[in-house]
Figure (cartoon, rainbow, N blue to C red):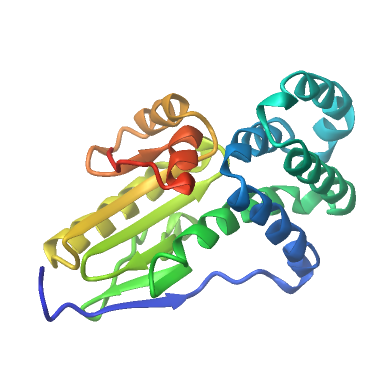
Amino acid sequence: MNEEVDIKFEVLDFLHEDMKYFDGRAKGIAMIVNDDPQLIEVLAKFLLTFIDKIDFNKRYKAWKKRLTAIGELYSESNLDDLIDKLYDSYDKVRGYHIDKFRGLIFEYIMENHYKNIYVDFSKGCKVIINGIHIKYICEENEKNDRLTIDIAGYSSYESEFYEVKVGPSGFKENVIIYLNMLNDAAHKNKISGKITVGCMSLEVKSKLILKLNETNEDYSGLGVFGRDEIREILLGEVAYSS
């Protein structure tokens, strides 16, 4: 490890004012799952099934009926609390904000976990290593620029950096290029004894891998985490691997 390494995080991603009305709802749902990580399975299936309010209004009753059949697998009170809050939130959150709301729940779950592990923690932030901001600039289209990481935790012993997306479709070429750049810079500068840079999705790992393969980018140096692996992380049972 390089004793002179300098790591800084600078938050760039903020919730817009017109979205703050659902911030507390996202935090409340996230906390239920942090308190009972087995519920990540239920949350994942809900968020992946209901990507908009049209789907929700059409299919929720049938989905809830199927869930009732496996309800005994979970704590009844925690499950009821989760479903009630999800239902009420989808009823109240404006249709054009549902996508952001879904992602925010997942981000808060991972923030709640990692901020209790790392003193140096941030989210939606620049990563600056020895004065250099790690970023990907796309010359063809600036909309593909990548300047921040969703989850960042640093210590001299271990560092972790993750991009988190509800579904795997968001892991496009530019995201993988950026993650590889960050991974290369972190290892080159030996920022920690152990370094993990990776992708997290609420889909199963096999489907996330299929999407990563479509990018034609090398992701062999990155961690790949689906919902089963995330549940193990939240339970403290994971052995980190790619």
